[in-house]
Length: 238
Length: 286
Image (cartoon, rainbow over all chains, first blue to last red; front, side, top):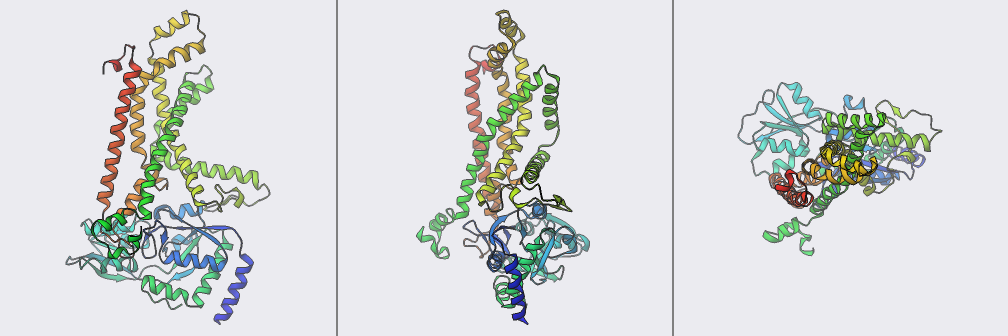
């Protein structure tokens, strides 16, 4: 079966591959998914995966960063060709852009707070990044949502006491909790949203097919599982 | 540097020496150049637009006068941020639309497909295959135009006021000497207006300096972008982990801007003194 998938994928690739440059749009502020490393380059799971997908699909790719807030508008207006930025596939977003198949399975989101504080996740003040599934979840949960442009600021808000807790992807918070010397702790986990996919323009069916085929390849040969395990400490089992 | 190869073994001054010279920090230092370049390039364009706007408003040809009036009043009446957000998008899409019409006349699919703005790949501005620095230069240029358009309107108003502030008697004397309208304008009115324009223009320059962080809003990687990026807390996924240092980075920007405005003030004081020489204006006394 796997061989069949690979064969089909390769067939799809050879017909769609072109010398066109694909501009990969990411946020660059959401480790370990994507971040700008100390050399000033885009790094993280999505950098490694993106480069691999481009190689498999025979595409030439360059990396572009864009604020999370305007990442969808700038995709549809053509500033770059993909969004590969830890973006969960949701119906709301799917109305505006298209998604490839998921490359990271639905991962629970987690509430993180200062150790030793009582947090009411359904009634307190919860920080979340603007336009995320977490922000809309908090807004509908009865808690007061405080939104920030970047994920880093949501964590800073918890440290400064501006918010009781932050709701974000567990993989993003894991390192922060682990390295806080016990200052920050996980309060609870919750399953919201689906898997993470690459966003493309709805008019870009060809690119979507090429990326889907390349994702099939890395799913079938286990490279994606290994990558997701190494970066996010999540078992993907694709 | 060689010693920076394994940062986890460093401490004290060596850690700092390596930390402050990372590729990311070098991008931060270079972005100060971006801001200075924006100031250096915007100022002359602002003056040209301002002078043109002021002349248009003084024009004897009604449509030109209306145009000058509309430009200064519309731009001054709309919040800056709206213009900064509107102009680059509108210009970018306008340019791509025109290029699409010229270069791909046989593509019949509409440019606006639902949410998407789709032009053929040779009409893209810049081309997708262009190196990243061209994309950045293009974004910077669009930002420059937005700045120049907004500040040009204010400069036009300032210069228009300054032209009218030149004592009428001076112009009449020139006319009595038999100078043509053009000669009166260029040789007397423009020569004398600068000292009246200077307080307004120096004000505008200060506001322009302080408005440069708006580059950040336009997606240009300026000093505010890098300060926020570098200052944010870093886990051990990064080579140089550290807690939230945004306060210190922003404090550094604060010092930079204070220095810029302080130095500008000095320069303007000197220019005022020079221009006021021999003129009976307020500027001469100070």
